[in-house]
Length: 337
Image (cartoon, rainbow, N blue to C red; front, side, top):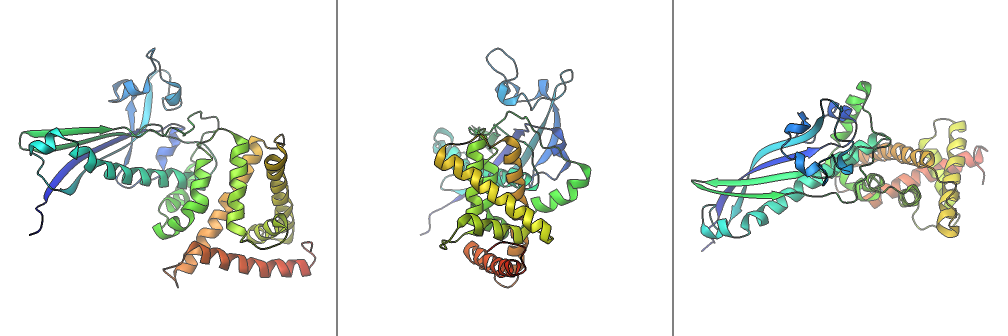
């Protein structure tokens, strides 16, 4: 006889203060969420954003706007999630134990994955800092007079909340940003672990040199596959052919990528980091953004004929095409041997 299961209706409430410029609220929020402008003094979780002296904590300094009226921009979501459980919501074991938390943890994790995707795709679109520190979760069940509640507060411990260069959304960018935020899940999944997450995590680390070294590794993952030869040359030529729109473009990008690789090598092998500045890091991030857009188109085209496409297959096809183009440009004297 099959075990009896019961439907548990869980009321979920999520509130996330946005740290950064309020123009972020111009674009589409994550699925099921809404952007809201809320008085900071009336915010339910205000005390969580204060330090021991009652002042706005340093983590949330860039979340509170306007010194006089003091308001914040939050992402909010409210919905009912139904899950299966071995006992009803009004059972003593459910009310007295950790059952609700155990049911809610996977729900919370699913939302957090979606939020990581959202902020990652924002950073894939353009340069600039936007962050979150706490996500305030409230889970409740009600079965007759029996009520149960669990509160979860995921903490982005490594998220940098010192907003020195905020992401500012221009009206002319909204359509393109929303299109990227709606990126199909298959393409996102193929690029998540090799490009998108690494770019996002560069906004979780304050050290420019560390970010620079890590992002050059992303370039290697995308354009090298263990061939013997000069990695710097192979990398620079392949990226130049992918992004260059003219022979002059190709030559300039080729020289730029070689310079990037030298700076990374100096930092890794000799401890020389004086050449790595915030401006150079921003240039490298923008290079990766341009590459990401090209890879997205490449993968989406390939998926039309192969829904089981893997990243390795997409990468090999990309490199093979670029190698043919490199050979042609070398023969034409645009690139050196």
